[in-house]
Image (cartoon, rainbow, N blue to C red; front, side):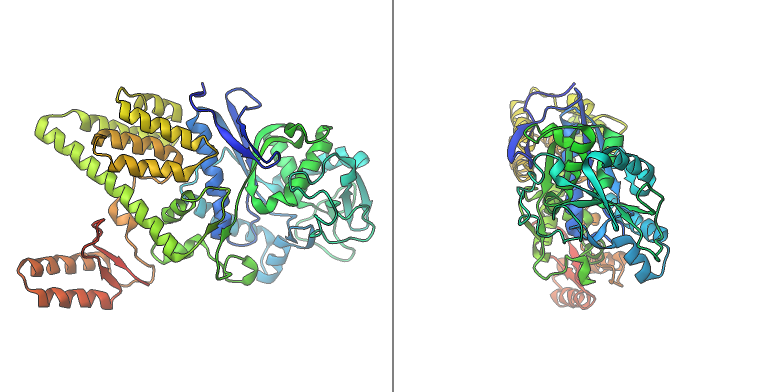
Length: 523
C-alpha cells in the first residue's frame, strides 16, 4: 500500500506545473531514464542526471510504490550532434581508437556502471541495450512509416506535421525554435528527423542491419521510444533526462510515441507516452572542462583520484534542487565533504551514547540500534522493502521525532526538495531534545532517500587522500602518535618538527578541526 500522508507532487516539464503523482497502474511506478551513449567516459555533469533519477526512484519506493526503473545504454545511432546530424558517436570513437565498436561500447559501459556504483545509485530493474532491440525498432518504424514517415536517399524521416503539438515539451513549435536541426535536402519540414539512417553507398558501418529502407542503423530518438514502450508499456508514469534532452530528443520521442499509439494532442500528457516528463538542470563548471569535445573533462574518477570520496559529489548534487543549475567548484566539493563529515560525526556520537547507556544503565536501546543497522543493510541490499523498514522504525510515540519525520516527508514529496530535507537531518543532530537512538532512526529512514550510506561509512572513508600520495596511512598514524606524545610532554619543538615532516609529504595535520578529523592529504 502507498502512503497517502503527504501526496507526492512533481514538476511536469510538459505542462510546466507541479502535479500530484497518480500512477497509471495502482501501487506501481514505472520510470524510464535516458541513459548514456557509451562512446566515452561520463563526466560529472552526466552523472548528476542519474543521481536525480535515483533520488526520484528512492522517493517513489519511500512512498510505497513498486518501482520498475529502466535505464537505457545507447551503443548505436546517436550522432555527434544531438540535432540529428554528423557522424555516429560510436563509429567515430571506434575509428579514432582503431578498435572494435563492440569493444568501445563494453569498455565505456563498464566505466559508467563503475560510476553508478561509486555514487550509490541503485541498480534499475532493467538496463536496456539499444543493439538488443534493433528488430523491435524496425517493426516500430514499419508500423508508423505509412502515415508518418517518408524516405529520402539518406534514410527514413519522420514528418512532424503528422502529429499534434510537436515541440510543446520544448516550447519550440516553430522552425526558428528548432534551428539546431540542420537542413537535409528533400526534408518536408526543417524539424523532421531520421528514424532510420541508410549506410551511404560504398561505405560499411561496424553496426548496421537490413531494413525495408536499406541497410543501415536506427536513429537515436527511435531507440528510447521502442525500449521504453517494450519494457514499461504505453503510457508509463515518468520519463526523466537532462534538460538538454527537453529541446530535441524528447520532443522527437513524443512524436514517435504519438504516432505509434495513435494518440491525439498533448493536452492529455499521457498521449506523449509518459504522464510526467522530468528534467534535471545543468551542472555548470566555469573552466570549460565539462565538454567531452574538449578532450579533457571532469570525471568522477578524477575527484576520487584527488582524494575525495565519491559520495561527497552525491552530497553536492543533493544540496541543490534538481531543477536548479548547480555550479561545480573544488571549494564547493570540499564544503559538501565537510557536511557529510558532520553528519557522520553525528551518527558516531549518537552511536557512542547508545552504547554508553547500555554499559552504564543496562539500556536495551543498543539492541534496537543493532536491529536498525541490520535492517538498514537489508533495505540497502533490497532484502527488505522500504515500506517494511518505515513501518518498523518510523512508527513512533515520540512527538518530536514524529514531527521531524513528517517534515522530512513533506520536503521530499514537494518536488524532491532535497536541500530542505538535508537541513532537517542537520536539525535533528543538533537538537538535544532528540535522544540518540531517535537521531539514528531518523538518519536511517532519511538515508533511504539520500543514499549517502551514512550508517555504513566510517571516518577513514572520508579522509582526503589523493591517489598520488606515497606516504601510507600507517606511517601517518605512527607519526601522529609520536606527535601526540611530544605535545603531552610539552616538547613543542619535536611536535612542530613532526608536523613539518608530514607537511613536506603532503599531510595537513588538522589541529583544532571542530569535526575532529586528524589529517588530510593535499595534492
